[in-house]
Length: 245
Ligand SMILES: Nc1ncnc2c1ncn2[C@@H]1O[C@H](COP(=O)(O)OP(=O)(O)OP(=O)(O)O)[C@@H](O)[C@H]1O
Ligand SMILES: [Mg+2]
Image (cartoon, rainbow, N blue to C red):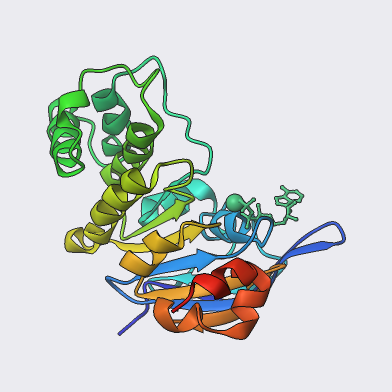
């Protein structure tokens, strides 16, 4: 079976800095993979490369077997890759429902269609009661859900979630994680990125990839990866070692 996403030795340099160094990864249909790593490890850059905002200096990116390495963000979105951004920026003047409808308009010109689709998605994300609220002034937890709803409305096969739980309380993060875990029911695979919040990763990731200074230093099941000395050293820190069973 063709992988949903494949990165082959992808490198991205900004001047003299290699932000992503020869990273390879594969994502299968229905899988949830999280990229973890400290500040500046290259997580957001990987998302920018997959979604076409940057193009790699070396390597290739395949989506459903097609080479998308040099495609524009617009084309990549149309092919079925949705994303959320680290800094949430909804259109504040619109309601929650209207924000989600913007995503739905990628596939329909009919307002009634877009509205029906958006309402369904908001119900799934347990935010139907906020449909008519302005996006302006929503609490962060609701903004993060709105980001997922907007991405979902574009009917992606793959959603990229950058720091989707950062800034949330643990209980908000765990509630959101439960929803993310269900995205494969809609035929959506997920690549998430987080700096911390290991609880969420442990709960929902099928597989974890650890980046450090742009390079992949480990990959595997979450419970295995967090035990690796090189991961503890580079990322989790001695505090984690003390907490680990
Ligand atoms: N557009 C850019 N121009 C120059 N350097 C960049 C650019 N984007 C990222 N970088 C650099 O690339 C490296 C990786 O950054 P990136 O944002 O991908 O890390 P991250 O893992 O997402 O970090 P964080 O946990 O802070 O979100 C950093 O050293 C960063 O300063
Ligand atoms: Mg980042």
